[in-house]
Length: 330
Ligand SMILES: [Fe+2]
Image (cartoon, rainbow, N blue to C red):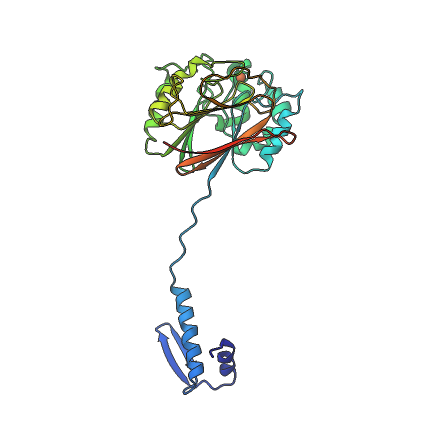
């Protein structure tokens, strides 16, 4: 029986009298005539060569990227944003602030006194878009001052980036504010088409902006100025749109810009106006509404995978509503 302890013992006793070269870089002293010891040396050598010559394990694929999204967030006179911020505290991921971050006017005082103490602590991982309340202060200047480069050019407010193989587009839906336009020939839509064309090889694309084209809540049936965004995104095969503005949660079935169900090529829209400001009721859901919820603050967690995504609505501590699912990209 071959035991490594015996081999070591033989060495200690000074009975090693010969050299067997088993590899050009390895030499071993063994006791001639002791078959057990020779066997141990061979076994130990094979083990060593196996370990030293074994191919390196391929690196583990990067873990999926996580997005945490909500809009309609901070109001100094309520605690909803504090509750949703606690959800974000416990999860790593990129934070998408979907507009109307700081009520009531997106002023410097609103950002400093209301947004700052709650969602402000995620500033280093936040990729925001502006809402209409940010533009209640001229040019949404405090918004751009607060987020700095992360918010894009203050004259535009739109930008894009890549995350875990996905292409992510942040748009400015405050059409008519300053130089912001949303029409089919506008600078923003021309930029959007060009940006999407430059990324057509990507399996998955997500866009987010404050105002929803489709909604079953207070702004039912939606904001028609968003249609050129949708037309460009749909043509490019985009998968997901995230919005807010209506203070509730809504998940829609994949649909085209006309609101027709399209399971193959349609865009799935989520309204996530659940950041903590207030609740807007949903009484008569429009076509393709799959899940409406109008009484629960929370954030939408999206897990971005190479060819698909999972979603889960995370409610604040005292609420039970949730929604989850999985989808492949187009
Ligand atoms: Fe809004």
